[in-house]
Structure formats: C-alpha cells, structure tokens
Amino acid sequence: MKIDILVAEIGSTTTVINAFDGIHGPCPMFIGQGQAPTSVLEGDVNIGLKDAIEDLKNNLKIDSIDYDELIATSSAAGGLRMTVHGLVYDMTVRAAKEAALGAGANIKYITSGKLRKTDIKKIVEINPNIILIAGGVDYGERDTAIYNSQIIAELNLNVPVIYAGNIENQEEIKEIFADSKSELYMVENVYPKIDELNIESTRKVIQDVFERHIINAPGMEKIRDMVTGPILPTPGAVMLSSQLLYEELGDLLTLDVGGATTDVHSVTEGSEEVSRILINPEPKAKRTVEGDLGVYVNMHNIVDIVGKDKLKENLSVSLEELEEIIANHKPIPVTKKEKKFVEELTYHAVVVALKRHSGSYRHLYGPNGKRTVAEGKDLTQVKYIVGTGGALTRLSRRMDIMRKIPKNNNGMELLPNEDVIMLIDNDYIMASLGVLSIKYPEASLKLLKNSLEID
Image (cartoon, rainbow, N blue to C red; front, side, top):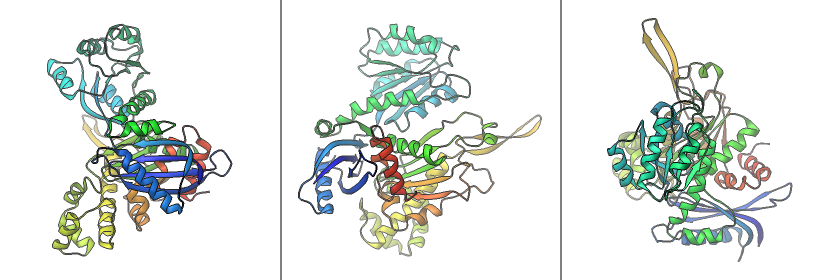
C-alpha cells in the first residue's frame, strides 16, 4: 500500500504511528494507526517504531506499506536540561520559563540577579543542554545580563546559549561569546516592556535545539536518518495544533493526559475585565506540564492524591482488589476493572492539572481597604475544551470525564464557564497534526476538525 505520510509519536510509554493520504488534495484522509510499547529500555527506540508500523499493517490488513514522507514527535529522550538566568524573578525569569514550557526543555535551575559562586557551581553540576540568559526590558537595565553572560562565557561550556534580554546588549553579548565554545542564539527580548511577554522566538530556538538533542535517545539516531522532516517535542506539536485550531474556533483549552505527565495547553487572551487587574502578564498560548500526574509512570502520585479509601469506594472494590489492580497496572488497560481504574486516574489528573494551570482572584488588604486582583491564566473566555492523549481518546467514558471537569461558579477560580463545549480528538492524531501543520496547515486543519467531529 502506498500513502503520502507517516507520522511517528515516540512517547515515554507508547509509540504511535499515524498514516495520512490525500495530503496534497482537497480531501486529506486519516488512514489508520498502529501502536507498540516504546522501546527505550531495550536500548533502541527504533524497535518500538518498527513494531508500531507492523501493528499499523495488521490493522489495515496489508502486507506492506510505502510512504513518501516520515515525520515525528518525541518525548522519549526526556527534555533538555535547561538553566535560566534573569534579572527579576517575577518578570524576565518567569517569561523565560514560559518560553521553555512546550518547547522540549526541563528547567533545572533558575536564578535572578547577578550570578553567585554557588550558582556557578550548580550550573556546572547540572551540565545543562541549553542556557537561557534574559534580563531587563528593552532600553532598561543592562548590567546584570552582561555580567551573567561574562560569567557563563568564562565557563566555556560546549552548550548552546540563548540571549533573550534587553536588545541594547546584543552587540556586547556577541563579543562576550565570540571566543567561547558555546553556540550563541540572539532572539527577541522575552520581556520587552512592562506587562508584555514575547516568548515565541525563544521557544522556536529551544525546539530547534531539542530536535538536535533528541537523537540522544537510544536508537533515535536511526530514526533521525529515516525521517524526511522535523522531529518536534510532542508537547510542542500539541500546542501547534491548539494554535491552529484557535485560528478557526477561537479561545480553547487542550487537555493531554499521558502515561508520564498531564499537559494543559490554553490559547486565550482572557477577558478585558480580568486583564485590568492581573498582577503579572500571561502569554496568549500557555502550556503547563504536570510531571507528577501520569496515569502509568506516575500512577502512584495520583493514587496518593485521591487516597485509596476514596478510590476503592469509587471503583466498588475491596482494598485487596485495589492493591492487586495497582500492582498489575499496565500501560494499556485490558479488563473492565483496569479500565475503570484508569478512568478514575484520568479524571483526577485532569482536575488537578486544570486547577494548577488556571488563575484565580485574590483579595489584598491595605490602608484603603480591600482590593481584588487576579493572578495566573484567565480561562473564563475559553469556548472549547479538547481532550487528547491516550487516556482521553481511548477510554469509553472519556466524554463523561470531560463533562465532570470543574467549571467557573463565579467564585475565586478563573475556570471555563458552564457553556464550554467539549471535544475529543477521536482519532488520537492531535500531536501528529501539529508537526504535519508546519508543511501542510490546510490539510492538518481539515484532519483535526474531522477527528473532533466538527464541521
């Protein structure tokens, strides 16, 4: 069988392969899907990819498959180890942190102000894959970023450095790193003005570095030779799909529940009313990753959050039965009890992750009485919530889980309103379509709307 494109998603627990045809015409089609356990532990992720392609062939009932292009997303190698160094934590450092999320980076260390000896020692211990230097609004404070750049350049680490601070410093920063082993990337200031975030150019560079780093996963260098296009971090690909869908539908939220993490992506500017009292600016496109909320790798964390007594009550099982389910927990549930258990884990992962992602009102008390402010991401204007990831696309009660998500009740939390519309990525192709959209945006949007069952 000959098709246009295969898209591989090499995750922490499962490798999925999606097949698409008719990409160049008016009616692109999702042909089918195969999956297999990710084979990092076997020392070669290529094994899992080949097994997933075999599963795809079995599902399509064909003996062979030929394709024009193979592109991929991955989280199998883990994220880039990243350190961030800015001027004021609540401003430039926070903006840099927002840029890193969704771009394939795991922030291991953050500093504000001028680097100290203990900071330098920590950076060397971490041995980061990438360093981000920020600091100062444009045409504002200059000295801290220059000082930090000099210190980091003197370390002569063979790692990429991104400078995303005051644009007045750019020429001087270039001179500082001219003789360093570090490859320097100059990007736009992540915090160019007070109350303004500008993170996309930094995010793009982090993604480019991630693509080079991803070959460090066992066997990934073979996949790099196989693919004909980019390898994106899977969360970044989901964000690209969310942004593509935002252009069509408006404000939305995407929930991605996986084996290791639960990711929340929101694309919304929030309401004018909330923005007027917001303590710190929030990016229009925001991602949070909850590394403790996976339904397989981090299953025990959710069990601890909910409590075994509550879980056995919800599942209508004895404590002994619950312990047995936990002990035999698999990446892909098979029995009714196993599936019901994962449904419980998924619901609680979604609730906790959504509340961590969303903002809230706060009351401040001063000499002039009570003042109400807002902090965090305002989700009150979200019109659609999209569910993706293995759990929210494959469980039979996935829509029931989505409908039970907490809503805005005019309290202190800035959650979506009751009239929000729930959508499911039924074909489980949202991440694949994110990387596909780089070259084929129109086809990707059509395929995404088909998967969500919207006109």
